[in-house]
Image 1 (cartoon, rainbow, N blue to C red):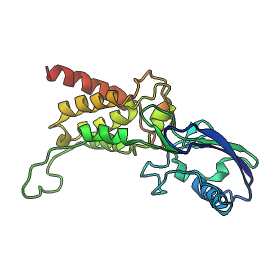
Image 2 (cartoon, one colour):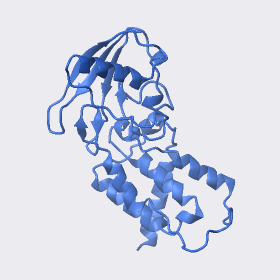
Image 3 (tube, rainbow, N blue to C red):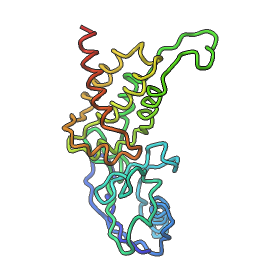
Image 4 (tube, rainbow, N blue to C red):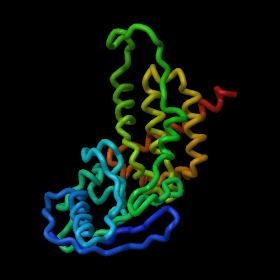
Amino acid sequence: MDFTLHVWRQPGPKAEGKMATYPVKDISPDSSFFEMMDMVNYHLLVKGEEPIALDYDCLEGICGNCSLMINGIAHGPEPGTTTCQLHMRSFKDGDHIYVEPWRAKAFPVIRDLVVDRSAFDRILQAGGFVSVNTGGAPDANAIPISKEEADLSMDAAQCIGCGACVASCKNASAMLFVGAKVAQFAHLPQGKAERTRRVLQMIEVMDKEGFGNCTNFHECEAVCPKEISVEFISEMNREYLRASIVSK
């Protein structure tokens, strides 16, 4: 398969960027998107040119590092799929493919396709914790949890923090991410000790980092590689309202 690749190139955070075009030939349809990108970088190095800076790690759809906007869609055309799980058979022979970094004030470009997503880390640091009692380990299943609550917590915990929700939202909102992180603890008894403080602090940091608000267009849910539901945003809003009242 042959493609024409249009890639955003930006040498540094404060430098001007532009699209660069690269022809790509003889790509197996079974190649992953990053195998194709690695081949492009190999040919650039052979020619003595600067390779394209990009970010990926686990190649199993777990780490969330493979954050690319492909033809205007976060992680590409396949729903419920991270970029590292995307294969070239998802495109047509001869396609023009446009590859850009996440676009958000809170995710500044470091270089080319790599952005700084440490704002997510600071949100997690503000509230992503639970209290534990020291001493002997409790017996397994000592705290009864209903299957419904456990399932909801696990659904929320699937969020890998890739930032696709932010990149796809016209307001660059992080509310799906924060909602998932709030909900994964709120549904478990171990997470209820800091329930009030957690949601207040996480939302405070989210606002300070420059993320926008949700206006219910649901782009975030549509592009989320783990298909996190926007219902967690509603749950976060309820938690925030409750915490605001309780803390007064």
